Length: 402
Image (cartoon, rainbow, N blue to C red):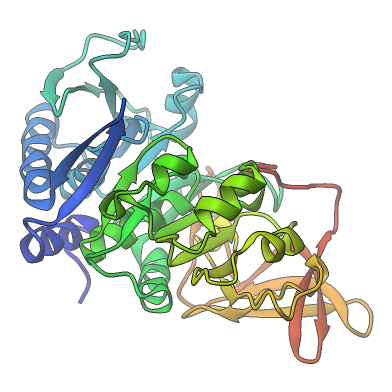
């Protein structure tokens, strides 16, 4: 059944099923602050009331915020009041964001312990305070809407530009929900899991982290990127699921990876590496303790199909170098094939009849309009398995960015 209010419906069901479970846990200065799903539901309804007092416009809502305990409530409230939202990079010129995305509302969230930032837009139409955070709501006069904007619950992501120039993509929930359902089963996510909330909000895999938690009653952990914090002696606060880029992961020292993250006593059930090719499979093998039970996966996909297309579980005993890391199995409603230039090598093409996102512009253009999306990546087929072999151009990705 199609949700009437998008992810608001998912959020409300989870809050009703797991009211006393911890939804968000924040580590700061040696202390943890926990927020239950029932508390987040109350915050969501409070935000909804205040947005509705400001406007009845169904336009795009821009969320200017970092990772904080209000994020799940914010995205649910946006879908209750509107049909789509977009996270805005706090370092971006806000006027450019307004112009490029035709925002109708901006919701700015800041921690009261941080210095106040003047957006220089106008005086806020509404100010409220929740969980030691100030929420400022601004109603804007949007000139128009994208000509090909679809009236369907969604979020907007900006691509890294690996398949061409950076562009804004409208992602309907029907495109991302198959990922959430599949990864829940593959990674066995339950209400007992602690998911490290580490991906920047403007990078679309962050929605996978949020929704894996909010669909299953799991806990999102907001904490510094320190191994002794993420894998503390108190197992209740220790991470069980971590999605990150390989380059980000390998910033940790060998001692931290061997002793904490992939050590014998690690709580980490799943390490999911995506956003760029894996470079360091040999290092993983050398540093993973023989008694460690963490399952390591690679994820492959593009924003235009949001988010992941393939997943592969790595058997480090069989992989001797990075060229032997497969793209893996396709996720639901997704197909991958190689359009061969030579006998075994060619362009990687993704195909889906249902997972079609919209490239927002003033001209009609839909990603995968012919059900096929050229990724710009090169693949090699060996013994029926596809392996990544680079780009057609000189683009490389590091930390998930072009």
